[in-house]
Image (cartoon, rainbow over all chains, first blue to last red):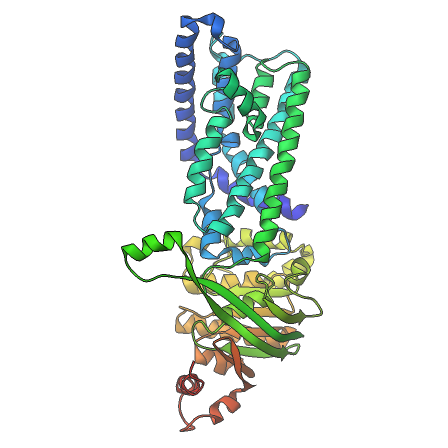
Length: 267
Length: 266
C-alpha cells in the first residue's frame, strides 16, 4: 500500500506546483459558471414551466461542476503517459515490481485531486455567497452530503478508469490523436458537462442515462442539488458501481494483452 | 545465473515506398516485413560475471536486454534467471535485477533526484536502514552529494547518468543490465561510470551485462564478450580471444570489431 501512497504523493506534490495555472483556471471557471447561469436564466424566463430542474438546482449543479472541473473533465490527458508509450520510455515502468495499471491509476487520481484541491474552495465559497437562486444551495440533510461524497468518489474513479482504457489503447494504436479527439468530444457531451442531462430531449436522455458517462459528475451533483432523490439515489449509485467495474475490467484486460504482445518502441 | 536457450524473437515492421501514392495505398493494404531480431540465441552467464554484449546497430542487443528484464516476451525458447522466467514472473523477477537504459530516463523530471529515489525505495519496499546504507554508498562512489537535491531537468547528461545508475541499484539487485550506459558522456563521466561498475562488481559480486558501442567500455569492464549479429550469437569468448582473431594483431579494438563485423557479414 505504501508504494501507491508514495506514488500518489510525488504526483500530487508536483501538481500543486503550478499556481499560475490554478489561478487562471479559477478565473476561467468563475466566468464560465456565471455565463452558463445567465444563459439558462434566459431560457427560464422564456418558459419556466418547461424547465426540467428548479433554478436553484441548476445553479448548484453549475457551480459544483466548475469547482470540481479537474475531477471530471474528460478532455484532460497526461501527455507524459502517451509519450512514454509512443517513445518506449514505458520500459522503465515495466521494470518495477508493480502493476502498470495500478501505478497509473493512482497517478491519475493524484493529478486530478491536486488540481481540484487548489481550485475548488474559492469557487465554492464565492458561489455560496451569491444571492438565490444564482448561488450554491446547501442541502440541510447530512445524508445527502454523505451520499454526494460517496457518489463523487465513484464518479472520479470512473473517470480515471476511463482514462486508463484510453492510455492502454495507445499500446495498440501508437498515436493517441484519433482516439483522444473522438472520446473527448463524445464523453464531454454524454457526461452532462456541456448541458446537464435533464435538459436533453426525452428520447436522447433515455439513451444517455443508460450510458456509462452519465455515471460521472451527473449523479453526485444532482444528488447534492436535490434533483435526484429517494430510491433514484440508490439506483444511480448502483449504476455508477456497475460501470466502474466494467471500465476497470476493460482497462485491465487491455493492459494484460498489451503487455503480452508489447513492442517497446525505439532501440 | 542467466540461462538462455534457443530463443527466437520476430517483429513485424511496416514497410512502404516513398511518395504520396504509396502512402495512400498503404492506407488500404499495409505491407509488413518480419524481422528476426533474435534467432536461436543461447548463452549462459554465471554469478558475478561481467559480460560485454556487442554487435552492430539492430543486432538484437536491446531486444535481448528487454527480454531478460521481463518486458518483452520471446516467440519461443527458454530463459531462466535465478530460476525464474522473466516475462511470466515479471514482478518477482524485477526485484532481483537493475536496468539502466542509457537513452531513457527513469527520474522524475521536475522534482529533486532524491524524491525519485524515495519513490523507488517505496516501490521496491526497501527497508529504511538498508536504503540509507545503500544510498550513502552510492552517493560516495558516484559523487552524488552535490546533485541529489537538484531537479533532474537541471542536471548535465553525465550527472544525470550517474543518478540513473544509482536509481537502478537502490534495491541492491544481484544482476545489473546496462544498455549503452556511456552513450553521449564525456571522458570524465565515462571513466567515473566504468570505475564505479568495476567497484560494484568487486564489492557486491553483482553480475553485469553491458551493451555498448564503445570498445573502451568493453576493454575496461568485460571479462567475457558475446558478439551478436542479425540476432545470432557469433562469438563467445574473452577479450583476448577476440583480439587474436584479427590480423594484424596490434590493431585497435574498434578495428578488430569492425573486421569481425566484416568477417561475419553483419
